Image (cartoon, rainbow, N blue to C red):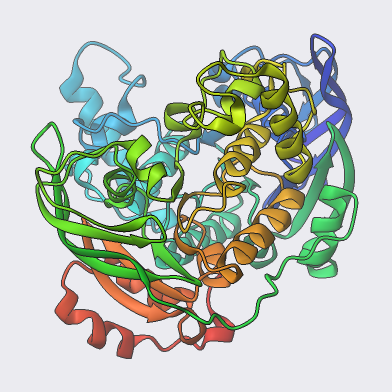
Length: 527
């Protein structure tokens, strides 16, 4: 059978860096093919070459047996290659139909183009089972349906090969299950699907074949039925990786953080937090689950001293004292640090680091007035020594304190922020997306450090979009949706399907009924 896509000896360099080196890859028609690898392994560069964003320095590309040179994304689309990006390329104020026909109007008479597009869309939705209201505003659709619109866009443009970049990163487990059903339908209709993802359990659940990249090279091809998550992880990293978090049962102490009736309205008048109440105890990890954009970021910023609440209060009880912060009480991030609060922000580039600073300056950012660094006159030798210690403890590469932070990979920037906050051993640790952009090999060490912090008595509030991470690290889990706490469960007694239901609930009175409705056993929960 002729491959739908065949890449031969693909090479791509950016200066001295080999992004892709002698890549060979065959994608058979009518299959779902996964591509996995650590950050910087070259996956995105390879797909960008296939979709026309980059041009390979050397090597050949064959589409359905025909050698081609893909000049740009328009040419890729003409060749039947479509791509659904991790961050959707949709106009939220347009309808579904308007988004799908955008750039494909075919003339100035839009009413004729609209009629043609509507008819074509009806045929596509019927063929593939991708039902979406064509007249709905995209901005009012849930994330899962927005992704469906992106797939419809690609199919409308004639895609026979569909590339999906981290397609489940913003989906609930239920939406992930729906996406997988769609992909199986596409496969049965002859569409070839390429999935780039770091979620190995999803690779095992949906793909027919999987290819592994490491250090810009293709290191393995496997039939999915003949491999495992353990083998794939080892191929990605080059060593044995512990995928399961090994921890003892928590022994919680006194309440470190108590949040009561907290509300927050943003500058546009949108209420982001609505009467939020919960507590975190010393010696436990409280996981906060939810689809991105449902108030988690605002909650962490309020607790870290970066945003003021509209109503409600929160109380800190640490060895430095007991402090209650009401609506008009002044506080800032420095005051929170003095109260023994450590904060790893969700977006390291916005709140965590200054990219133009060297690593040594970012390693003390927020703590520069501490005596240990020679304050008030900073001691460069002490700062460099402290940075070297952090880099060694958290395996930050390269170990060059004087290197500009912008020159570190995103994963190594993240490790530097984690080291800065966690090595101060705060009594309350606010952790946002701790492993975002971090290689699978480093995730193991970060998880171990979080468990160690818990076991030493820290109270940890963990925000993560990765349900695997939330479930494996947390002792208790609360769920947020639309700015509200919609449920609380013990991590040992729940599964991803139950959490997914709570993530889509907006009525806390329905939680018990929703939990009762969960029929999928824990061992069979969707990855």
